[in-house]
Length: 433
Image 1 (cartoon, rainbow, N blue to C red):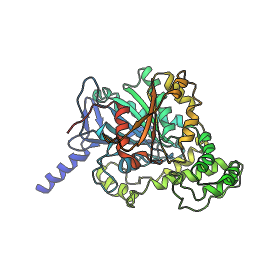
Image 2: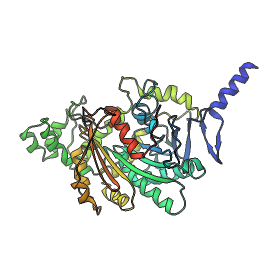
Image 3: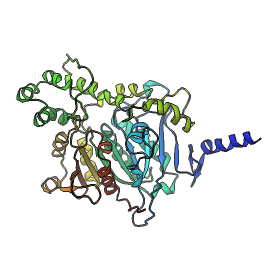
Image 4: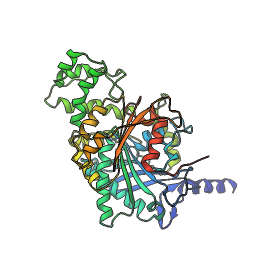
């Protein structure tokens, strides 16, 4: 009898649906600090989400505690896995507490998007999304399910924060969510959109690689002249790490012969991102963690679904949108008064700061000239002003952070200044303890 009671208690901790203010959560911890579940955004297409409630929450009526939605890149990189356990979540890849977790500034909502990413899945491969807009539509459907029946969530401003290709998802989702809000179909407050090392304008990034590598002595003048041809540039990029231009690439050479060299190169190099997201900084296999202890904890993952098992389907389905820019969408968000934050790691190559600055200068935002003329303010870690860790400039609803010493994965390389930046973005009440 005691065994049966213990079993029932453990089952209730995970299986018991959480009904809060007429909203049914699929599963969660007994104390309500974590909730997770699936939303069938289309027939046979399922998005997985995981919400963490912050233990650092400050109740301040003048500044409601925010919710931060993290969108990973790829396309096909898992936010539930990589962003959560290797970047900003409460636990690291070894399941040890992370002191720099972004829970210190907001509740965290991770979604494995598009469908087929991470624990998300499709029952038919033909249901994989093919465009950024289709992904945004699915995410908007998920937000309706999570927010519309939950008054508590509705009172918290939502900040969409993205990394890498996730930036394209973030701006398309921002516009899709606004449209749904204006139509009365979605009940939430959009606090802003933040684009971290985001693949907003592929052309500007590709054109920045040669000059940037020359500026930092990774190629010489001969290499720079050759870089005017993608075929010649390939031999220099064979050994170059795409996420930190200070490092060599451990992978072998890339061979391309078709006219679509630039697109093919990007697809090959960028697809390695999907592999890099499967390992923690300590070398532990993230795939084993997610398909082992984490899947066991969550309980609701179908037996035939493995974490990351459909990521290749996602990446292949979106090849048509891979090189399409999303500068116009950023302009639309700015014109609608949405706070847009751009942040970039200094030593990133694939989404280099030089390329980001180039696409920002193409914005048609009416206040762009004033923004560009503004001086930058240095950033430090806490009250230690002896080491400059970055710079920021802003005007009205556009903000730009230059994060020094960071590559493509800014929260990993510069956790302290990143956390301060997120506090500024979300305008979180200060937690003191």
